[in-house]
Length: 119
Image (cartoon, rainbow, N blue to C red; front, top):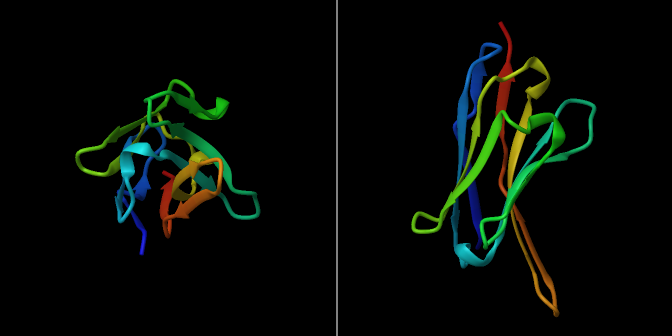
C-alpha cells in the first residue's frame, strides 16, 4: 500500500533550524501535489506548505520567509526546511500526497513527526 514516512523532527531551540523529509512509496510521486501540514495540541490541522507537480509552491502566512518546501522526484521525497523556528511552530508535522482527477481524489497521509521548539 501507499506509504509516506516522515523524518527529521525533534527538539530545537528558538531560532534554530530543522529539515523534515517525507519519503513516498507506491505512488507515481511526480504527479502528486505534496504538502506539509501541522497540528498543535488543541488546534486544527493546518496547511504549512505545498508544492505541485509543476513546482508551484504556497505557504501559510505564518511561515513565509522562514520555511521552504522542495521535492526530489528521483528520490520520491519532499522536504521542509524550517529556519528561524519559534515556539509556536511546535506541532506534529504531517506529510500529505494529493492527486485530484476528474474521476476521483487520491489523498494519503504520513504518520507524523513531532517538532518541539523550546529553550
